[in-house]
Amino acid sequence: MKISPTFWIYAYFVLGIIFTYLAIYYAQEDGIWSFWPLINMALAAYDFFNAFRMIELRKKINKMKKK
Image: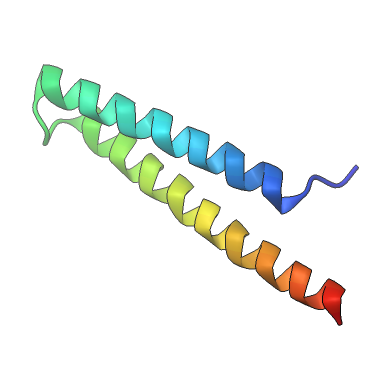
């Protein structure tokens, strides 16, 4: 069973938002340069990067389908 890039776009965006929320929460509790806020910021950045990569993949797939 193949999962479409659209599913991954939404999944990565939701995960990015969750990790961003956690980074803000932990930054308020422990300070911005603590371990957990930094880890959550890195995970959020990774998820947003992958979401944008999937958007580009979806554009390429749709372009190939039109040809």
